[in-house]
Length: 115
Length: 113
Image 1 (spheres, each protein chain N blue to C red):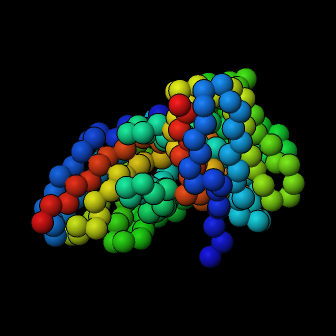
Image 2 (cartoon, rainbow over the protein chains, first blue to last red):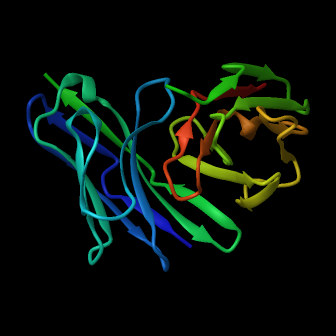
Image 3 (tube, chains in turn blue, yellow):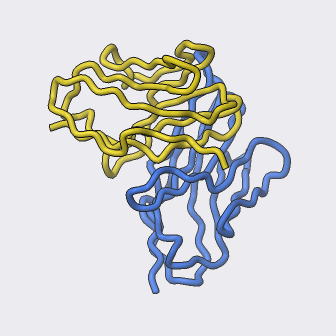
């Protein structure tokens, strides 16, 4: 079975400051890793994904994440945030289970960007 | 750009009633999923569907729930007898293979009164 832990439920940050949203996972099999963003009253939008290859992946809106297998982490970063980045961010892992593939989401981190 | 669509956007129903939530996945996708998100909580996996059968389901997906692909384009989630705790946002998703990214629909907000 897989699990995902997002270490911060809320992250307040000032505009133009850097931010890191932390995500740790556990799995006994290889996983695929994702970050999704959810703006208020909207659906889920994929920010970026790690399937294989380079451990540093770049996504939309200036976000990037680094896959660290030894630490089982996939932290999301942005060097300079905007007010418009205020949203809920979900880390997710997808892996093959006995009954097929399943994606497990973390509890989410609410990023609040202040002026 | 192709996208997953869901109807209705908001459904209000009385406790005990049956509801059917509809999804149209991206046309060349083969894997289909339903997730739900209770207000203020995380997104929870319900079920995955491939080759006209359920490939994985969670403990939430009990006998009250069923899924169907009635034709070549729609993918439905049926709740037979809704409970108050079924109130949530339900997301449909699809993917080309089960290891690649899932494309999510905008969701259907189900309110059970």
